[in-house]
Amino acid sequence: MSGRPALRLGILISGRGTNMAAIARQCREGRIGAQVAIVISERPEAAGLTTAREHGIPTRAIAWPGPGRTGEFETAAQAALAEAGAELIVLAGFMRILSSAFVLAHAGAILNIHPSLLPKYPGLHTHRRVLAAGERTHGATVHFVTPELDGGPPVLQSRIAVRPADTEETLSARVQATEHIIYPRVIGWCAEGRLAWRDALPWLDGQPLAQPLLEDFDA
Ligand code: GAR
Image 1 (cartoon, rainbow, N blue to C red):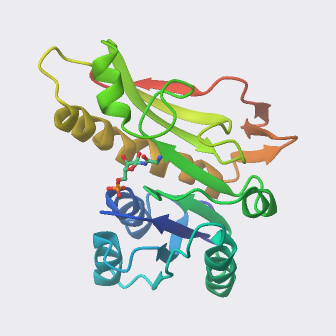
Image 2 (image 1 turned 60 degrees about the vertical axis):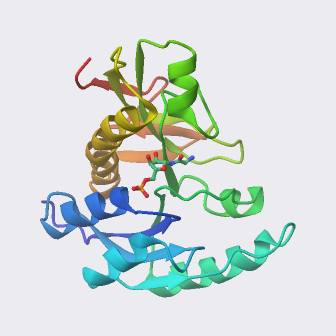
């Protein structure tokens, strides 16, 4: 690993937090030059918060306010992230929509993982929609977050083949297994200074990334 200080991550989750756990494991094992500084959820009962605590990672539950009051969550989250010294915000199964103001305030410093080959299938129920459409391939995308929902520039995608016997559950499990590989990889690139955000585009190794990188898994 380089002599750089570990990149401090603030991870936002809503549920199981298996991506968060995969990222935390790679940090712990020194495979990526990052450190999970805090895990935040808007759901106090999120299983991922328990997992994070079991690994000694500081956590915060911040209730999601009523409609039109997103700012209350964001102000509290921003304070917690700043206090933890988070440099990169990692959305890992965070199922709420952040305001444009929040996203723009952290431009180039928020990553998300989405369970589809964006720009195909933004939004919810991606596995179900992929099966209904008879797609032959599916996957996941790590992308920078911009105010357009699931619309920010993609960096790395995993692709798998859709099998005739696949169900929503099997597809989800196989896509998630690839997420646990590609998300830590992209965070590692950020930690090494290889991936940066300039002129509203991701740059990898000094080159603008006009197309996402694509990795085939069991395709
Ligand atoms: C992941 O599959 C992620 O791609 C998806 O939620 C799951 C969270 O799993 N994210 C979205 O759908 C965001 N729109 P995890 O909590 O076990 O990491």
